[in-house]
Picture 1 (tube, one colour):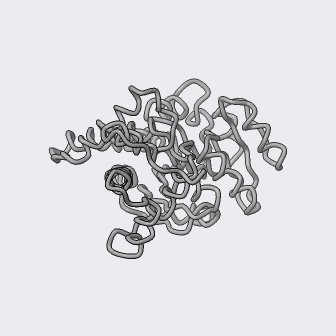
Picture 2: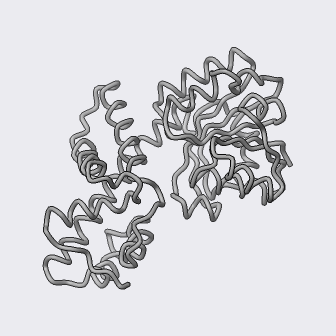
Picture 3: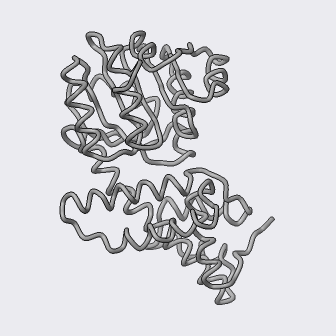
Length: 297
């Protein structure tokens, strides 16, 4: 069992931290909201006052934070992880951030004697709670091999994609597809509704065929029950699609589909729906088609 630190205890991070604790690892936690720290302390974790204090006490330190500037501040800022550097420390970032930020952080941490893995995850809040996430990593083989016992507590699949930044490139590709799935599902549900067909029966009819996907298995039951709460928040999906488009600019990759889908999420944000689930993009289609998705109550 390892000594592990976890910083960022949101919907995803809090669930991952719980699974690390359940697996028997010693856990030190830090978060802006004290209540989330207290909840884990009640389960056996230890609280730390800042990221430096976390890093000083552990062999592995994770972050799971909203965006690139947040991660950079926690790693390199005052009382940051880099100030807690010591021999054998491995830094693992579960956030979704810009690939170039991941590479920069890896370089700075390597100079300080800390090995770094960018290791974003996929599988949503369900995967985080159930320990069935997919983990895509960038960094050295040695750091990855050391982290595998921790990944076993977090997920069902983990792949070393390449060098630093490669995990975030894989996450860019993942989010291109996730965004497309959410938009396509919303469009399909409203098409069925507007055309007079029960959307739930439509989903049952198609999800065993070529249209089968995780999104179609997991999201419609929530929507039909009238539940549009996260999950994965719409503003985070919007942010991730922005990272996809920025990466496209960096490498000269046209992304017309991703650009259009991000506009759907921009619409959600303008309607005050930033904190709804990313599947609630169906609401944009409701407004466009002037029809409400049928709910089972």
